[in-house]
Image (cartoon, rainbow over all chains, first blue to last red; front, top):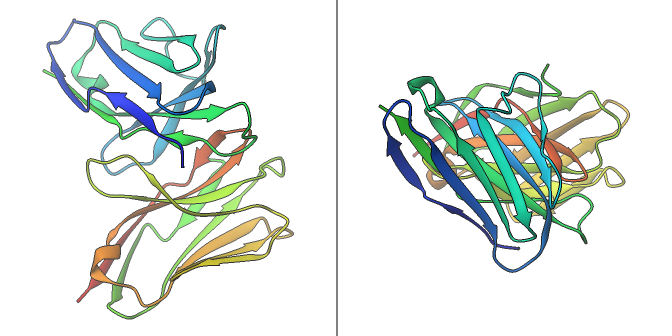
Length: 116
Length: 110
């Protein structure tokens, strides 16, 4: 399958600071990328969908001003958690879909964010 | 609202037994139904997937059964092994937009 890389795998930040998470498709062009959040022992919840070159579409209840998503190229999407608070501590996972695939998306390895 | 319902929440099986996890979905627009295996601290890894034009798919010890009319699908793990102990998520997708079930924590006892 295709490779999607997320960076960093773990990050600890202070409350009130911003954190950027990168999601890269290494061997294909990702026309669409998805960002998920997973709290401990819970399922993955879709936060937003981003298409290259356009604004992200956010799921209901997800603050777009707090979770900034940029999908500036066909191989890179970033999620910035602004003014992070302890309740933002979670596992953030991206997935990417290429133009040739009408169904399957490939997942990154996830980023564990801890806000202290 | 949860678009994919998964059960059971947890499952304990003896080594060599059969593990069965069930899922149901609402939206008939879904056209891809994968199962993911997730170990603690790791991202989900695709295990097996099925499309709605097929009623069953088998890969090694893993089988998906799909009932389109009932909007249900299930994962069967034959000859379950301790290494299969993980959390399993079913999902339903349309154009890559994937919605997950709540997950099943499987424990296979030696």
